[in-house]
Length: 113
Figure 1 (cartoon, helix red, strand yellow):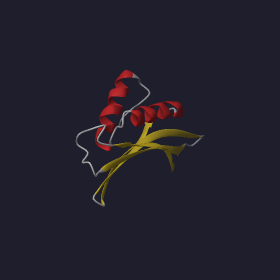
Figure 2 (tube, rainbow, N blue to C red):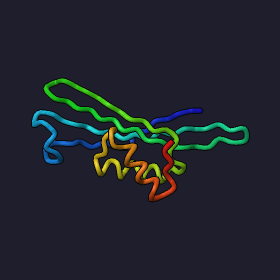
Figure 3 (cartoon, helix red, strand yellow):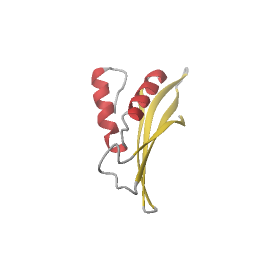
Figure 4 (cartoon, rainbow, N blue to C red):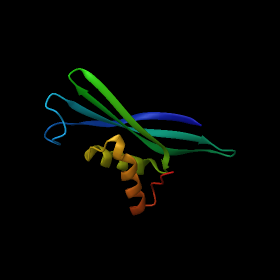
């Protein structure tokens, strides 16, 4: 299996978004599409996943957390729509699994394993 990670987009959270952000602090969120080329006996097919990376900088101290979910989406256009929703709503790594599970109940395109 070959895995490719593509940067989809990024956003930031500041004090206008939440009171939890300290004035001098900054939170950056980055979203990646994970493409898995799954090699079968007869043909190769692709499955898509999501990675969300949160980077928090405060007084020159950097902390980072990330969450990767592999092979949870069957179609690339669905992966792109999910990534756009995550980016617009500024979803962090800690919430991404819950959001994907909620989406999977609404549409059977996203499958969390």
